[in-house]
Length: 149
Image (cartoon, rainbow, N blue to C red; front, side):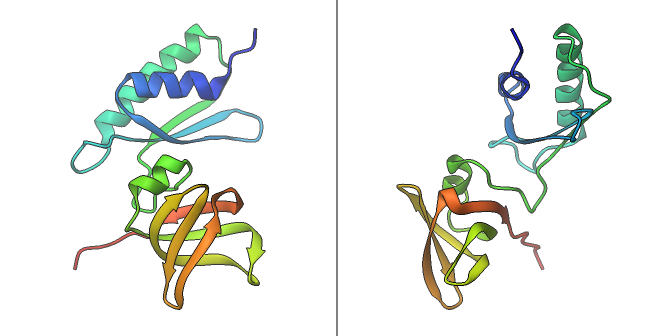
């Protein structure tokens, strides 16, 4: 029985009290790159959090006999990727930048404030007004970093 690596990693990360934001595998699966978050942690993910998750996953990979060269664990950063419906719901009211798979009204890139997520649709407030986009058509979405002045 082959193991589902994504499932195994997500179960371990959530078991440690973190959220798996994203998992990237290099083309040949030699580098595993994880981005973790913790909803209730002030100041965000730090080096100790990354070390804890890395140590636990390294032991797990050894036990499960997963062949890889390098494991990288880090925070999602200020320009965090939005992947799951829960991510979009959590960051309603935030400015996001997104790219569509298929163009809508002749454009694929949108930048605006996320208003809501409902029934598979995103409502985004642009400078020119509100637009509704199919969540299934979103290729990439990221938070726009805000810096305090």
